[in-house]
Image (cartoon, rainbow, N blue to C red; front, side, top):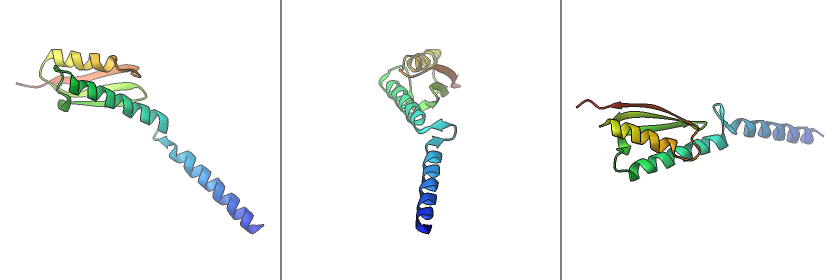
Length: 103
């Protein structure tokens, strides 16, 4: 009987821990993976694009909302980076905080 109670307590504790680990902050593991996938897609498109300097622009995604930050050499680069992000599947909105680098 006592071993059954210990087993039950272990199962309940394990379930509670597993449920707690299923969230990363306020995000589920699934949405965290989705956000990481979106960010990777955008950065890959930046690398392939001749206008955007991928190493100078940071991409952060939270629940499908993309935030772009960093520095660009031209207004064309700022606009192109935003357009690439907007055209990426899974993106709900884009906040463009890219600034022009001082010459």
